Image (tube, rainbow, N blue to C red):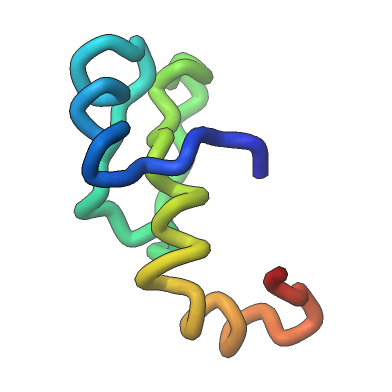
Amino acid sequence: MVEPAITLLSGPFWRLFHPEPVDMTADPLAEVTTDPDRHPFDSNQAIPTLLCGQYLERMDQEFPALKSI
């Protein structure tokens, strides 16, 4: 994952001045259905921060072969 870290200071910048959305309330491990008409730039820039932060323990449980550093 190569995305920006969404912090208290950088969050407003990414939400206001970046074309891709930042949704810190999303559950990045929730099962979703894909929309073939969805534009690639509609991705949530907060997903890497969420996976390496509040969802790290769940990531480790669901994907034990994937080592977080």
